[in-house]
Image (cartoon, rainbow, N blue to C red; front, side, top):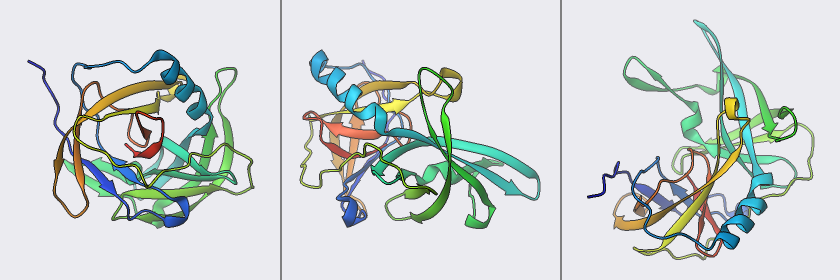
Length: 220
């Protein structure tokens, strides 16, 4: 049988409307993949999305010292607005999760990965967070001309539908992007609609998620 690390996927249309977003929030899942998308479609999606993935970095400054924290971010506006998961600001401490207060978050940067040289670092500011949908926004201090991901709120997902994700590997792997896929296996009830995803695992937390047509539907 297939061994699955169970988790719940949350779908929410209560995203910032000006970004036309539909959020998909899920931890990593692991299972045997059941089908493979056409390689040409996967390659095209991978190439299209890679320039829109960045790293969000900040310094957590507290009474015990300073600690650098980073995680995946998604460019959602060409001028430099980046969305990331609120879990980037959750720090495990003594068996519990501690949410870093705004006042302790310092020195925000957006890192733009490159396979030819070290990531470019750009000063940024913390714009705000949405606790209900589990996302936060950071923006570069100087305007950019980046390729942004446009989320499609009209996409309807059902049990059996396949979803894919493009994630970022850690710093020691030069933030290389990678492609993963999964399948919706159940719908659950909650404050927001919830989906259970299995079938190969999605990307790291904060990675964008797409339906089988390549339309952006949310983030991990």
